[in-house]
Length: 329
Ligand code: TXA
Ligand code: MG
Image 1 (tube, rainbow, N blue to C red):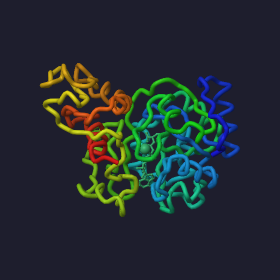
Image 2 (image 1 turned 180 degrees about the vertical axis):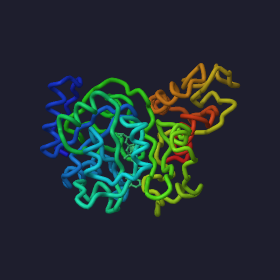
Image 3 (image 1 turned 90 degrees about the horizontal axis):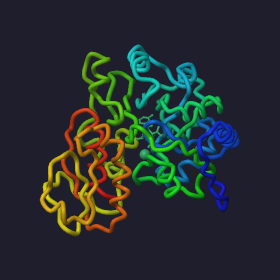
Image 4 (image 1 turned 45 degrees about the vertical axis):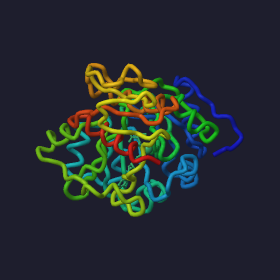
């Protein structure tokens, strides 16, 4: 973190990408778009650069980071892929799927980035700017979502700037992201297990595997002191305003986060109303989720009332993030 230096925000053209790659190589922090959310990137091999990521986010050090690479060969230098993992990469990479795998013997990722575990989280993102940056840089880039720890993930460069201004050297502006929720995380250690629902629906993964994914125990996410899967902290995606789930009505001093075409009692009198998807499209809702939470959080409402979102497909990830938001800070 070069305190005092002004953060540069550059449109993500070829010159900016080349500058970002140089910045990473010299140990700097670069925020860049992926198809899921914006990431706060550092050279995965440089411990001090990785430390700056934790510092900039105010992130608990036990919470390990995802390493992003440009291609499968780079991924295989970092982690060991069994047949299941290879099946998933063939079907879904590049894309919004992160795999947790055993490290290779000479894994180049800094110990701090994996929080001392003998496993590592990896993905190949599907965004032209992320791909160009990873190719230009040549190594693995660790990148958590580019927000302050515990805050809502950023889906635009402006969100990144509002959380991390002056804590990041360069922000590559690639416009609004497409998916809007973070990647789905699957551990391929013995039986494949869903660690975090995300931008790739569980059903798609199970179709490719031909069997159900193992799930975390229900209460695994609820103990902040001893996370069973690191990072699945119960309160994580939290706006400042309290969040109330499964709302069927809304009070005049509340803001409403709506979903679908149905009307809600009191909706016309609410402090603010935003609809994740008026047609009930879950992909549209996922893309709007974090931006709308931020906007409603700024309205000074007593609470954000959220209508029910169905649990299938991307709804599983949306509901996971909403539950965490409702637990609060
Ligand atoms: O879409 C995404 O995944 C975004 C973009 C930037 O790629 N990144 C992201 O990173 O959401 P982050 O740091 O916010 O979430 C990474 C999650 C954390 O919950 C962390 O605990 C988990 O991955 N994780 C990382 N390494 C792990 C490991 N070895 N075992 C279990 N969980 C791991
Ligand atoms: Mg995050």
